[in-house]
Length: 439
Ligand SMILES: Nc1ncnc2c1ncn2[C@@H]1O[C@H](COP(=O)(O)OP(=O)(O)O)[C@@H](O)[C@H]1O
Ligand SMILES: [Mg+2]
Image (cartoon, rainbow, N blue to C red; front, side, top):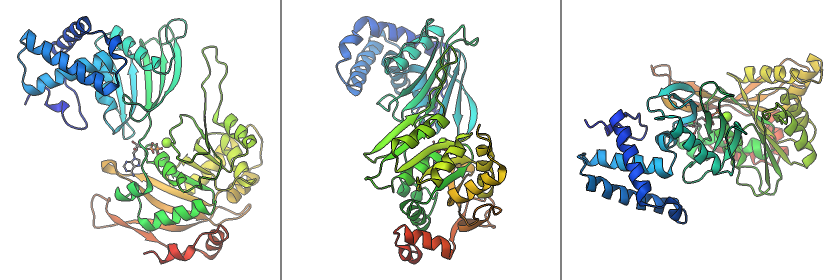
């Protein structure tokens, strides 16, 4: 097996050696001597790449380096990546299973795949190479990072280099003692509800039920663990909101991509170097209420903003959507109650229960299973009212096939709709018979 073979698969684990690095560096230097990159900045990315690849292939032949065809292609690609792309980061950016990149100085990279951290075997060759990559990243958004502004937090739009878009945070020495430190959160690819059905994340009937909930303006909470697909499902559900509505999304890192024309996206801001200027989810949720929203979508409730969200849902902003980190629908309700109690407004506990019961209509529970499968395992209606103890009625449950040792196979079981829930859908103008009739 050639040492480059592991590069060619979709999800690659690169193998590099010192000789490769020095070859890449040599040809990169030669390339920069031969072509004026500035000149090439007028053509689009693909054309620029194609031209540079031709030049390097020519240089490699001219220098008489003996390489197999795949080694040669690999070398050409790495030189171009380093000359115009994001170098060492390119293979990571092209791996759809990676959601976060953590660079701790030039010689250590970690990536997050399916919620697990793993060390990436091919870090930068030196600080200079890392700084060059950082400059290239932040300059796309006209930002600068150097000794005078050693901390940068920027949102990168999706483009040919970053097909999914990302939020990047850079901290340089002397603030960081590890050397230049970069954290890149890659936004998940948007999946439509049909694509989720194809991936067996839910069935058609459950999809129709969720569509009905959104159309009838029920308040829906998507619950699940890290990486269980909450944001992805929230995004897919939001497609059922009418394009005539004014939607405000509030997120820590704006990952949602709604198609509706009348959408306002708000994103938090961390504190600056002096520790000032922080804008939290909570600030944004409160402010969004003054912006005449028809619907508010909060990317994730994880603090005191839960109280503002619940109050908004209870005061004329029905049809709002959010996600919460919890392991079951029951857990999601008590978690919202606890989060709301973290707010600086001192609300008695029974009043918080009242808020949750009145605000939340439906909980959609997601689960991440082995092999990268994400699935809707429960859809429950909050039947309890006012200060009653929480009571949930399952509308759909995923029943695991007991004979399957992997616990992956099973089927979606839809229950009859409770009368009071059915009435809510009817009031919301939903054709309930169509959902019930669809088997
Ligand atoms: N049903 C699904 N099947 C396969 N992959 C999925 C599914 N839903 C989401 N993903 C992927 O899983 C990763 C985590 O999804 P995300 O929605 O960000 O999760 P969460 O918001 O719960 O942390 C993303 O890479 C996303 O593209
Ligand atoms: Mg998320």
